[in-house]
Length: 271
Ligand code: LER
Ligand code: MN
Image 1 (tube, rainbow, N blue to C red):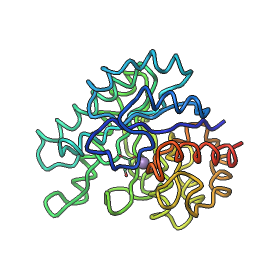
Image 2: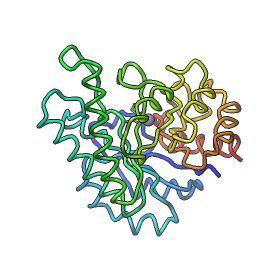
Image 3: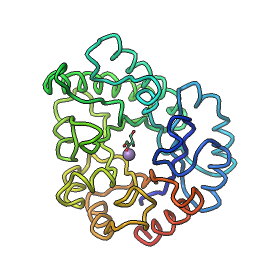
């Protein structure tokens, strides 16, 4: 059965980002629980910032799980990414992600590599960049396995990466890896831009899909755009998906209404 989750961001630089709750993890957990969400997904500035939260207490008080932890702050705050031409900077990027993997692992929460993947450029050509990314996914996938969680790789739309923008390209990226501990994130917002058919994209990802960002066409809460969820849910059922549908959406018109609308749509389409 697909489980519901909602994002909480505590990264000041991402105050205007596509996260439902902002700034206050305790308040976000309380609201998520009151609405009946199964889990929260956390976007934090660093591993230390995750460790500093009384997460064990909050999750247990509210009977919530931690669905995943984002790593994008490495890019947003420090400009780090896994295709940097500098080996030293790539290493700093991997170290940042390892910290987040370790901070999420006690809660069985996998880390997400989204914007930290970077892109290929004139300086670092496509083959070289894909090689860098695969090297990192191998190393970080093995690290996550030791920590006891999978690692999530997220194809992004063309304005955010040029490495893998569809589920099919995501599967091709993973195919030669030595680790089998890396899964794909199907973010419906990115898929709405890049896939010819979102449901087919879900089938293309198939058994590799390990996480879903549940959002509408305009990156607002599910139910506030023109996404047709019927065929998407059908495809998720077909591939046997039983992970999280996690709301990564703008807090429009505000956090509370975005969360409420999300859970209403979640129940309507998955219930
Ligand atoms: C970025 O657009 C995104 O979708 C996030 O989940 C990854 O950092
Ligand atoms: Mn996403």
